[in-house]
Length: 450
Image 1: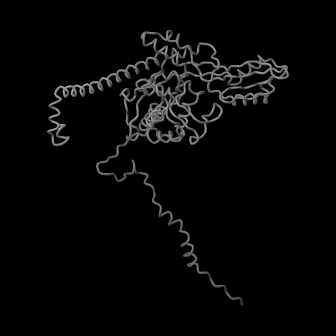
Image 2 (image 1 turned 30 degrees about the vertical axis):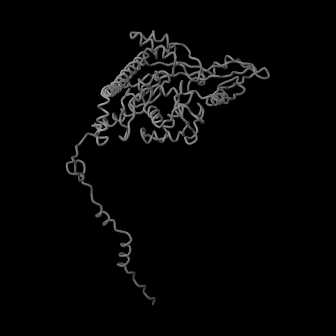
Image 3 (image 1 turned 135 degrees about the vertical axis):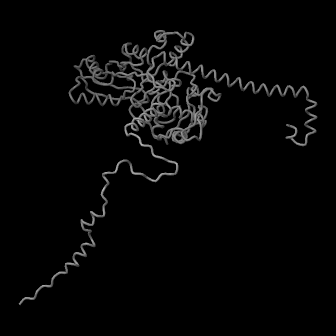
């Protein structure tokens, strides 16, 4: 008879398994059920004298978004009509002025300028500050650069070198933006942490908004102002000062149109007229090209000037793409020989190609012909407004009247204070013997001054 197998201890088995893994019943009991009947927000312990005010989510979202939008509009994206600068550009120039990085001083590392500006005035990241600094030095971005640069500031095709490799200082023209700033010509406001002061606007000896233009994207609005010739803008400003009732048509006799730093051609005047009269328009730009005879009697199209903000390498790549895709005929080769800031794009044509037809197709299919959208939005009395040519110049003239008035009052006060001192010295000279007697008879210097 076979021996019976001993029964397994079921109790020990349950105990062991229970020790390693809790039962579902115990797990369910250990998790408290949510109180579906409770209404409102859970009350947290508050400090004495502090209360919680219930608000509607929709109202709070609207208020917070408006605060954010106004912060971007006022403090980041839009230029001021008075000096034509955004806050980041104004803070860079002011910091360099405070640090003594003037045109007659040696160059300093851009990393230092970026770090100082970020630490003291503009806590929004070093990348954005360095980009703004470099842009003020690029002759293909600004009609009249404000920063004197030493190093690779990039090109329309490639970015600049890192800030640790480049150097900068203020350009002499930037000193005209800062002229007389030490004579109480503008208001100084506290910086973001209250440790120092910065100007709310620069005195600006020339109308920088029109001269160098501006571009930026805010919340719900954007600005796009083209650059202009300095001499033309100054002549128009002088005419407006001498003839306060001058019309836009009168001012347009001096300001013929935008003066893009990269050259090129402007097609027609309708876009210019719309932009100067209404503040909005579209200006058609075209590259400057020439048809020449190259080697082996092959005709070629040579591009020497590009529309504003167009990239030569991008245009060459686009042409090659169109040729490879069969969308553009008559082109044998494309070479981008641009260097040293000079544009030299050579498009070699096939022997049987019609150069004029190819050139028209290039204008149609590439950015050799493009448009500059004008949307002249700037801060006027702290409020974003669409301005026309006359508004831009009038805002600058009003600013200069305020600057000159404040400078005159400052100099008058200083002269009056100096006059009081001289009057006292004159009276002392009239009784010089008595003054000397008092001084000699005094026990110490404090007694003599008393």
